[in-house]
Image (cartoon, rainbow, N blue to C red; front, side):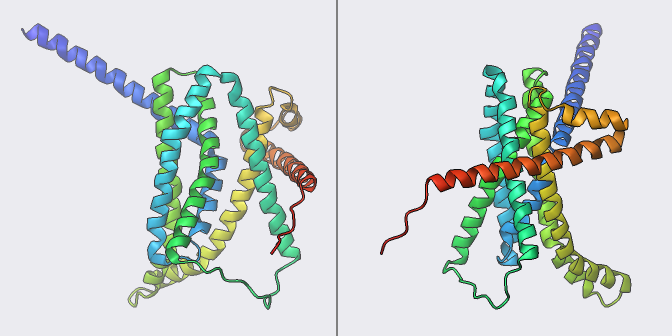
Length: 313
């Protein structure tokens, strides 16, 4: 009887070890896959705060929560099954789809960069009248939320596709578990960070009113004055991340055709570690700007072929 119990305990211990090992594998692959998609994640975090600008502060967190739920639904119920089915039945399609997504990121990043440069050299006159759209706060909130979820869908598609590239050689269950982990981890991280940014000025205002501690008041004042700067920096970093990730995705999914763009400078400079990353990111960034400009030019030429008819009263 006792030997049977010991054997059962040995079996339970063995199962526990296998389970722990599997969980370790899932966690390791999820973290590895998430890190590969870091550039898109940065852009996702940088883009989201703009969707609550101009809305009531009390609605900021509920709106972020709505967007986060929409993002998680996108990842778990649409993108995860789609990317796994493509990986099983049409694995050849993953790289071209990634390249197309990278091209879209180049286009979006170039558009942002172009608008930023244009606004800098051609600022809008302050006296220029601004038309105010007649819309209720509820309608504005719903429009902003829907727009944010649509944008997130595109970025999430890139995140899940990049993550799948990391785990595609693993077993089915490890793939599924790792991608679920990526979806939850990245969504929680991005929107938790966004919520923290949005409420940091409220925290700063509360701390700045502390009458008993000078250091606390100064810290609160620093938060209030620092948040606008942080948002500008985030916007800049997000655009740069969108470009270098988009360029890198195209280069790495060109079936070896463009790999020399990264390999040759790295070998010449004998770059390793941080220097290697900086060289590759810089080349990817420049390549993405060129590709984005080409896409914008092509779109403008196509638009000329189909001119809009003037509206008739």
